[in-house]
Amino acid sequence: MRSLLAAGLMCVCVMAVAATKTSAQGGGQAAPLQNLQVLPKDMARPDVIALMRTFTLALGVQCTHCHVGTPQERFKDDLPAKAMARKMLKMMTAINADYMGVKAGEPNKATCYSCHRGALKPLTAPTAAAGGF
Ligand code: HEC
Ligand code: HEC
Image (cartoon, rainbow, N blue to C red):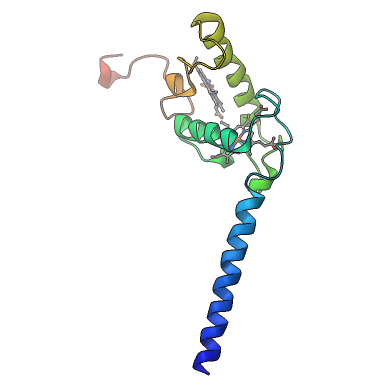
């Protein structure tokens, strides 16, 4: 009985590991990205995800602020925030290239965080605490 239970547990564990692997692959390298309109179409998934993490930190939101559904459905365009983020990406690229002299391949000088500072609505003036009024 004991050894049967142990064997059963082992089996569940192995299945869990297998399931983790599959889902890691499902969200991982294999599938090409389907709906990049502003970013380079051949941008690798890990690079896109790394950029997306900078969005969540810069704006103080979760992935789901801009994306509906499962991690496999990030290509969908259901939320207005995603459309706004595309405009913001274009604006940010223009600020860096046209006004800051940043060349292709160089790190950006102006980023989402430069304005947003962890908030969805950037401040337009110093807070009272910072001497504003
Ligand atoms: C502020 C909005 C925003 C947030 C937050 C955000 N994304 Fe995105 N995401 C976008 C936009 C905009 C695009 C499309 C970019 C383009 O068109 O070039 C995109 C595209 C993607 C894609 C490519 C999908 C495809 O197949 O075309 C993936 C994957 C993705 N995001 C994952 C994530 C993950 C994971 C998170 C959380 C860590 C996240 N995103 C957070 C705005 C966001
Ligand atoms: C030059 C400053 C600036 C930069 C850089 C910038 N933003 Fe914004 N962003 C704003 C302002 C201003 C608003 C409008 C907020 C409001 O409506 O009060 C805004 C609004 C947004 C919104 C809509 C907010 C909401 O309620 O959903 C999203 C999403 C967004 N920005 C994403 C980004 C992303 C992603 C980046 C980097 C690619 C970025 N922004 C870079 C200034 C900036």
